[in-house]
Length: 551
Image (cartoon, rainbow, N blue to C red; front, side):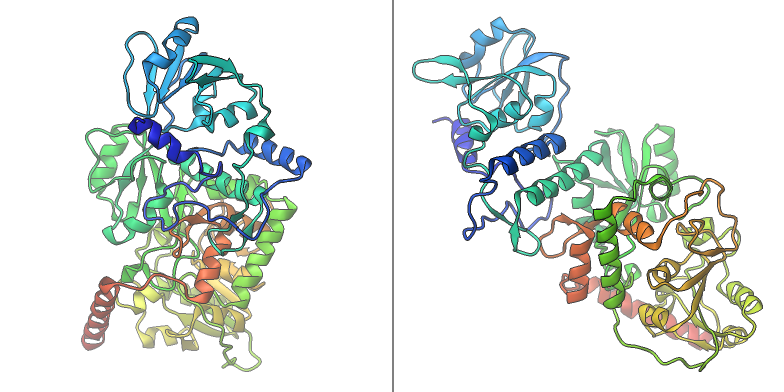
């Protein structure tokens, strides 16, 4: 048996539905559920699942490369090399020969080697010639493409007349959920594979990443993986790129590199931290468990539309199942006291008694969201002044941004200056507990305003954050006129937390739904911190000490 034949034999026991080999993943394949019967024994259920497989194009190595193909061809897939298929190739031209072992074939036939996306390889095929046990034949059957089977003894090629259910026999065992270990129904398994396929397909044109700090690359890489080699990260624009776009962490990318990418016509895909990030600060070099990836523009910049803005404006957000997921997720976040960087379930007393309590979250003053979405308002002290003017009788609490408190970023408000407008400064109180306690929130562009909406609080925006202009906030900034839709809080949650970000499960190392990361954050199932965050916290303490001494 050749090496290629042995490799094909090794693949035969694999389930038809597979887990892609995401970089850093701790899960190589679906685990079998030995306590459950084989999935989809009911014929009607199996027919529904076959329709789902066709709709989502999953099964086999659906994450594989997608080489250029002719308009019409017979797909010849064999480990036997040219000798096995040469006569068929002569009869069916043009043809594509797909060889797992990397063999070559002279002539006009297009030769493709290695494992590819089988759905793509069959996308324009008029027939398939394959080994008897090749799972690509299952996909051909689902797509209605005639399949011819290569027989070794005697050497013949015959039409395979089996139906799709028969071909799937034994390829759809009962599986376990890779995130919680529970039973995984066949439709849910297909849906999970479809989720991974959409992620991989969205990354296929990425040539690499630019501006990504070394300490976050390992967690970002699976979310930007295009199905083949790991995504390369660069400090400057590569001379040769294998794609038409670069993933960009703009705040850390050299300006000259950004200009060079634009000069060369590379699309820049904006990547930022997600809205449920981690239980630690990015400024402390704690890697994110979620990111946002936007091909139109940064979600915090109102100067142009972003994919998030289009999601909120155009939807579709009225699917009942999606809204129920959003409602359930929002309730969990509120009940568990979950915020972007922390979790707290303690309740705080109202220090101002019966007075109206208003929270003003500070921000990093040189942050891109403030520079672009603040519309000229960049000073935390100026924001406090404006809030006091609008709320003369309220009890105002000012919470400095955690990165500023940690000593890493700009935006410090001296205590005396802050207390000239606020009643108290609450540097250490968790944001979720403060949001539960107050009656209203005033923000520039802070995400705390969105977190307040989750808790049904009154929110006033002085800048133009992504959640302004949809009918849920009092907007003092110049909201773009293109934001015309009026949305419920759960519709905003569906777009902002379920559909827009990408999440990485810290336990399995797999891209995952939002609910998985929320569950991990609520139960403390995150990777142990390394030495770097501890060093960064020490640096922050030194900076704070110097600031106090100078003052």
